[in-house]
Amino acid sequence: MEAHLDIAGVGKRFRQTVVLEDLSLAMRKGEFVSLLGPSGCGKTTLLRILAGLLSPDGGRLHLAGRDIGRLPPHRRNIGVVFQNYALFPHLTVFDNVAFGLRARGTPREEIAPRVRRLLDMVRLGPMASRAIAQLSGGQQQRVAMARALAVNPELILLDEPLSALDRKLRETMQVELRQLLRELGMTAVFVTHDQEEALALSDRIAVMNAGRIEQLATPAEIYARPASPFVLDFVGQSTALHGEVVEAGDGRLSVQTAYGVLRAQGHFAKRARVLVAVRPERIAPRPAPDAEWTGIDLPLAAQTFLGSRRLLHGHLGGGDRAIVELPAETEISGDMLPISWRITDTLVFPAPDVAE
Amino acid sequence: MTRLGIGWLAVPACVFCLLVFALPLALLLLESLRDGQGWTLDGYRNFLGSAYSWQVTTRTLRLAVLTTLICIIIGYPAAFALARARGVWQALFVAALLLPLSLSVIVKAFGWTVLLRSNGVVNRLLMASGLTDAPMRLIFTETGLLIGIANIFLPFMVLPIFSVIRQIDPRLTDAAATLGAGPIHGFTRVVVPLTMPGVVAGVTLVFSMSIAAYVIPTLLMGDRYQTLSTTIATSFLYLQDPQRGSVAGVVLLVLSLLVVGASVVLARKVRATP
Ligand SMILES: Nc1ncnc2c1ncn2[C@@H]1O[C@H](COP(=O)(O)OP(=O)(O)OP(=O)(O)O)[C@@H](O)[C@H]1O
Ligand SMILES: [Mg+2]
Image 1 (cartoon, rainbow over the protein chains, first blue to last red):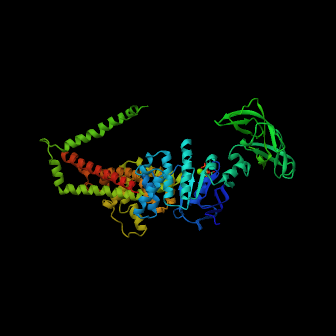
Image 2: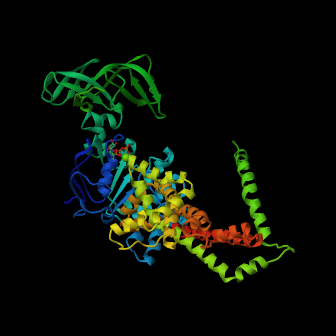
Image 3: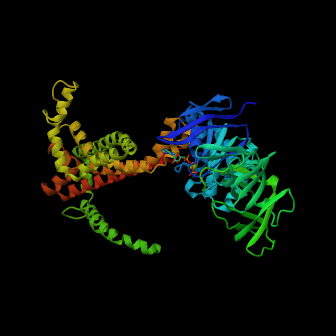
């Protein structure tokens, strides 16, 4: 099946700095893909290239079977919700939403009903004649959505559309936004550096780091099977211990760490430097009960209480870290805790070159 | 600080304005309604009934309108060039615009009398470029006056527009483009409306200065070119006719307010047009 959006080998550098490196990404129609990555990794740059606001150094862009790589932004039919919205301050809510329709020469009698429908969709019907400055942040966000959707684009790009809102509002808006886009069957690229937001909303997540996509997969897979130590670290929390493979064979490993020998699955040469990791909720507060489990004795540093859950932080050195998630009512005493997890839950990566 | 507390900061300015502007204006108005005998509308009757006064008034108005239009036509794109210029270039352009302001108007007007002479720089350039064969008569013509006055008042158009352009979020034009607006639609529907406050400020400054200009017309056109300002001066200084001078002053003021007010209304309209 042909991809709806196909980004192939796009690169971009500003002077000497490489901002995007040979980046490729294909999306189905109606798919919601998040670009997740730290500040400065090139997310906005990629969106601007897609929208035609920035020209890439190389690569090809196809949207709905059309080569859009050489089209100016106003011919691409891609809606954009900008970071901080970029609403037209001199126009009313209605005129902001109608802007794209008027720019395309839509007949006057079609504009009003379409704008009203969109405003109703984002629950701003009664605000049509308000000035932009008279709206709250959440309302402005919805005007920006309605404005981008009014022209019925082939693709909508959203650059951290919720980051300016407070936490509570952000959570409601997440759900609304996802529902709206799903109802419209809209293909969306959503930029965020909030991993929870990406996990909650996306069909797939592209985790970006330094201008490259480190992993492109479903949220569940990104969380359970991170492709690199960067993804492991950036998405969710984890225990991660550096070590050296001391025994290897049959896809089974023994790894010597500073806190004892751990067993894991994987294919590594003996003496290879590796990083052994496990997600916090996979850990049980007891010694390994049988050969299917492996574990260490963890020196405890601190606890955080999260209502229904409790997080225990380990006191480790040398670039190692440990975090255990337990039900809140679990009683923990002493400053040493035996912990263990299933060998099948263990993640093993080649050790990163530079220990952070 | 409370609102009231902040409000007190404006008191010195208010007192100053009251004493220096409002009070003389009130006196001017009273003076225009009085002659040796008592209260009368004769001053206005005489002024409006005189073909010569009408001629002077329309001439003054035409000069101010043309000056303002020339300043908009040259100043608007110049303000964009200034806003686009980078680093040192921008600093140089701003300096080129600001430095002449530190010179007295008299010096600049004299400068133009030299430039506009038949063997002056302007004529030599025109002839060297082949645009004209013989020197054009520029000094003591309205064309020469417009060149000089527009040049002298140009910074007052460019600077307010420039400062407004700098505040326009560049992502607004990006947003317009992604919504399907070509460069022209984006410019006329987003950029132009948002620069309107700067244009109004520029028009207010240039129009009210050029309608009241005294030194520049006198130096570039001579005494026979009467404007409302020169009428005021001659009435008070030579004719000892304070009523005529006051009436001309009131007419000048009303015209300024009307045109500036109209430009505000017009700009609001442009700004709110979707
Ligand atoms: N016009 C430019 N000139 C030079 N460097 C630029 C330019 N625009 C972006 N960059 C650089 O490119 C890199 C990526 O920028 P980009 O805005 O795409 O990051 P981002 O992932 O969107 O970050 P954030 O989450 O902070 O918005 C940054 O290091 C930035 O400094
Ligand atoms: Mg960004």
